[in-house]
Image: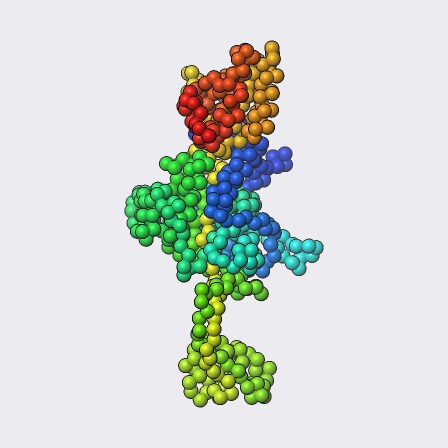
Length: 584
Ligand code: ATP
């Protein structure tokens, strides 16, 4: 299959197509058609079920526009950049690191410094992919990926479309912690649109400018919370560790269960837990596990605050693409918002028993500090308080030295009111750490479609089919009358209504011969088709045909809803259908 075959099928059968075609289209924006929107919704539902319901995490829905200070704190304003190089001839914009990855053996060019990137472009004689002009000597610049807007009239209140859903969770942490009754650990999920003004969107759904992310922020106490590894201990992971990427020629994987990966110290325990959950989820929606791996970030790629990070990657047309990131982000995000905002981003952890602790305090003599330091007296008093908490020994001599605004001040110790007292503490403030599985829904949908696309032969004819999992297939069952006459059409339409009422996505089709109708549904990825024929009018049975095997069985109309339910839920397989139904 070539990429264009899938893109062509996606447009023809209503999966996805480039938006605003009537106006020439705009790159990086896609519209999901009737099949695609349902497939995407089914993938999202499966994510909600696995990462939310089954893990006991709750979902929120925050705005997609947020004010500038949020992104000052998160670091996106300063550092959410990609490397841009422009073609001197045709003016096309390109991601410099991608050009290097495409044209050289270098696999991860994102973390290379700009001057080195400029050198690499020159050394490899890289050219504009659009017009072939030489790019050597062209400046490479940092380009911030956020879409900027103004909140309200005027330009005094800049805002940004969120480049990730995560910040909407971090910013609301103080409120969310209250809902969790200040008890760690707890997890919050969010699914929704994120926006990045990508320099060169490509590969249809893989790199777009508006896409859907599904993120979980699991807040944990780093000193005592551990994951319940038993829940996913035996899930087998295909791992591509950093050392294998750096030191081994060719590609060499390590296969370990989640438990082994943790026990061997290869993956951080919280990250490993979610790699297990992630693998189960990707498998359940139909990503081919032979074309799926977890790749560890190289040391240059790893954010300085992250203890460990692995990307889920899927193979598409011989290349590997990031589908999701699984990171242990320490307390970086909450600490930043704690520092930049007026709110408290810690949780108060109650001790089982109050503890008696010694606390150093000061009670400065302001009648001395006031005349001595004037307007700076308050800051000197604050500095004394901070110093007492940090370094009691500093108060052992006759004078104490503190620094305010870069200037040192000496204060007689007797004027500081320094004392050490015993106090009862009922708990302490803890800055939670965060483990984050960050999943791209569009890339998941794309991988599902690519991996489901198959060409085989049926009765001597080539057929194209999407072997979608019944759990996510947008159309679950096609219902056809052999012909729309002698009551077969009525019966088939009635059956379609009944199946819809029973909760199945059913489609009715009476156009063309039966073979053509089957092929149409095979291409759409419909797992089952039901045909009403002359016998059906007599004995109230229909044929049920399975997409992948093309096998058919005859089943009573009355049994159809239960039977389809079993097939959808995986309670029975098509091959079991001659056997009696399992006991309820
Ligand atoms: P990449 O390196 O491919 O740009 P990233 O590391 O910037 O991705 P993250 O910030 O970790 O991506 O975002 C989490 C997930 O969101 C990604 O794994 C991917 O599935 C999805 N995602 C990110 N950018 C895009 C995009 N432009 N189009 C579609 N999905 C995206």
